[in-house]
Each structure stands twice: as C-alpha cells, then as structure tokens.
Amino acid sequence: MIYLYLAADEYLAAERIAAHKASLGDPEMASLNMAELAGAAATPSTVMAETSMMPFLSERRLVVVRGMLDALDKRMGLSKSTESAAYQEAAQLLANLHTIPDTCILVLVDNSVDKRRGLWKGFVQPASGDRPERKIDGLDALIKAKVIEAEVLATPDPKTLPGWLQARARARNIAIEGGAVAVLCDFVGGNLRQLDNELEKLALYADGRPITPQDVRAMVSDASEEMIWNLTDALAQRQPAKAMQALRELQRNDQNPIGMLSAIARQYRMLIEIKSVMAAGQSNKFDIAKQLGYAAFPVEKAMRLVNQYTFDELEQAMERLLEADVAMKTGSDQNTEIDVLVAELSVRQRRQPARAA
Image (tube, rainbow, N blue to C red; front, side):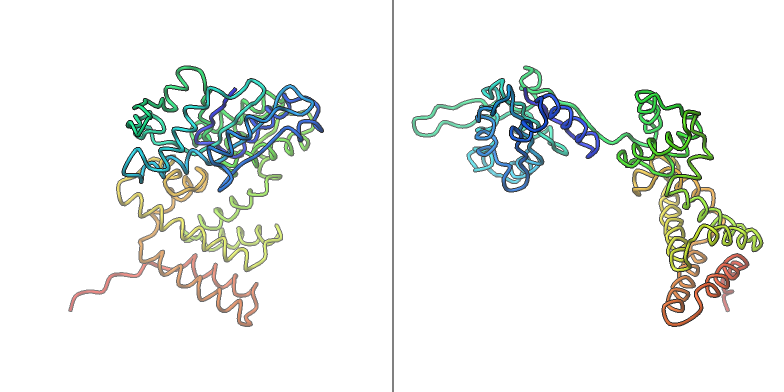
C-alpha cells in the first residue's frame, strides 16, 4: 500500500510511521525491513529499487520517503518542457507506483504539491523515436483510483488545537478541564510533541483528578511567559507598584536579570509587530497568530496592550532596553539595573510632539 502524507506535521507523521512500523511485527525484524530516504537519496530510481526488495523473514517491508515529491514538483515547475529530466523522473515514478508489490508499504511524507502542475494533474509525454505519445496519470488520478491513500497531516490551527488536545486526553483517559486545555494550548501553541508530553506530565501531577488551569500554570515550562506578560501589562498601565510586584515574582521564580531583560525585549518587539499588523487592518487574534508565527495566548495579551503605546514609545522602550543590556554586560549590577529599568518604563510618560515654530 502507498500512503501520501501532505502538509505533514512532524509529530503526526511520526505517529503514523510508528504505527506502520509496528504492523511489521517483531521490532527486531522490523528494523531490518525498514528503509528511510531523504535529500539526494530520495529519487524515483532509488525508491523503486527499495520497494522492489523482498522483506527479510517478514511479510512486509516499510519504505519511508521524505521530501521527494516536494523537490520533484519544484523542478517540474521550473522545467520548460515535458521532455526535461524532472518530467522523465516523474513519469518513471507515477507510471510505476501501481506496480509496487503488496509486500511493501511505501510512505511518502511531503509538505505540499502544487495542484496546478503535472505531478498532481498528470501530463502527456510527446512521442519520441519509437516511443509513442503517452498520458501519465498524476497523483490526483492515482488517489482517486485508490492506488495511493492520501491524508493531510497539517498542524491544527489555533481554533482547532483545543479540540485536538481534548480528543488526545480522552483517548488516554486523562481528565482535563476545558480551562486547562485553553491555557495549555495558549502556553505551548502548535508544538504537538510538546503538548503531548506536557499532557502526560500533568496527568502524573494530577494523579487521577482532573487537570486544572492552576496545574498548567504551576507545571508547564512556558508558564513563565504569563508572569512576563503580567510585568509588561503593569508597564503598559504605568503602574510602578504592580510592575515591581511582577518583577519580584519573576525573581522568586529564579529568573535571572539577563533572562528577564531578554523576555521583556521580546514582548516589546511583539507589541511593535502586532501594532503594525493591526494598523494594517487585521483584527482577528487567530489570523494574527498564524501570520506572525505566535501562539494565540501572547497575541491576545498584546492586542489588549498595544493601544497603550504609540510607535514612538515602543521604539523608545526598545532603546532603553538596549542601554540596559549594554550596562548589564559591562559591569553594572544586574539586579539593580533591572530594578531601575522597570521603574523607568512603568512611569515613562508619552512624549508630546514638538510644536511647529
């Protein structure tokens, strides 16, 4: 059987491949009957050679090929003729996929294939010498003919990620509150491997009771991000006492001054990015998160704060952070420097534009 995994999330693809490997039987024998091809080794010729090999003391052999279709599709897109080497290789692959023996499981793991091009739609090879014109069926036709089983394994987007995590918890008989699911997804984002690991860790911590949002904040490594946002929020609201309280909470959490400075700078950079996107007319937190590559949690936080600043203020804050960074790395007492920085940023007033003479 041939499996095609498109837009393949690393974790989801690894799960599918592990299941295919388990289907081979004895793990020791399975390792002798598995081949993985990627990069320069992943060519139609090598793939067909690997799939034609008979399994050793097993009923089936597993061949996993990563990125071959992506690379071939791009080469075909750059080709000016269907007689190019890229089209010749595509014809070799597509015409022979249906001949792969039942003793082989072929798994193709790729990002995307352009559905406007020949690899997906198929193409016609012109007659050449003694060879007549022939039509080559593309991936689409092979999928419809059930030669290939295709599945999109994309990372869930921020809207569907909580549902994915909730389903994963149910499948493992792990009780987790809806609020905890939301907080965990916000903290970790779309890293499915980390989400799965955190879920297992939280289940052990909860010891049979439902996982709560408080558990997530206490146990998930990225929970310190929320404390940084508490500090950033206090700075934006010009609340020195609240800002210093948030700073002390970070210090009690063993955050070193350089680490806190970097985290604060990261939040201000994010505020600048999100303010720019919002100024261009974008207002949906999920769309902004996807566009900028952030999790929904920090985007939602930043969207509530950006109106507290002008672009000039944000740039001034970044300049002050740079000054503090230099001072910390050239002999100043780091704890004193971070205290002074937070005090200054929390009381800094907006600069009035200069009046015209």
